[in-house]
Length: 243
Image (tube, rainbow, N blue to C red; front, top):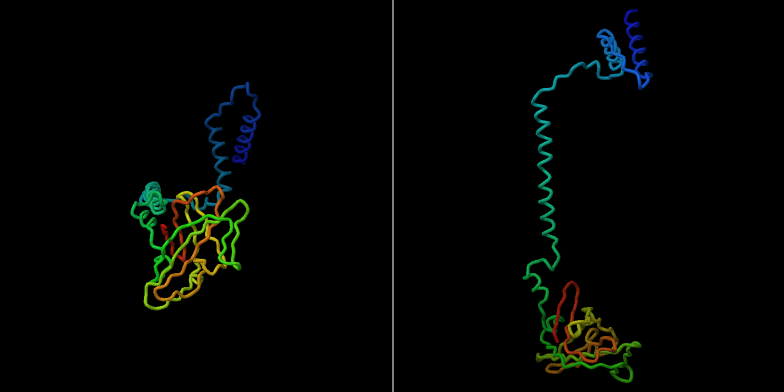
């Protein structure tokens, strides 16, 4: 009964504090009243504390030390991530930032017979011309599109062996483009001309030559071609040929 009175007194005291005006001085509790409030609050907390039955739990100092070391270890692992990111960036540097030796290998040029794997057949560049229509005969002709013109590169393939050699460049499926005057790059035209180098199929007799061409469509404002570099891709291999 006495406990109930104490609890009721604590409730009235808390209510008085909540509804007291802001301009009035706070009510000062006596030591007995403070003890009653603390006792009531502890009973309420204990009622809803599911771990109350465990009472106080002893934690060894080694466990506390281990938790502190774990937190410190987590802080010291961050710089390693930065190091790994730095290594990854070095591996994925663009070509412009790679060593000069690697860039020089990519810029090496080869002879046309090497790029096309012609064996004992040599390939010589014999000049070029600009026109709007290229005619091989009355049957075979290629016209440039409006506003364009054709660049014709003349090439001579000579069989330097003492036996006839059959060629099937069409089967190689080369992808050819030309860089003109060190500024403009244009793709080769694929035609059905019998003397088109990119689609040539035929046999060259021993000691004889075959006169072939490569055709490119270029703007009409190009009046002169002073430098030509072929770029040839066959499968996974790429070659550069200076003519």
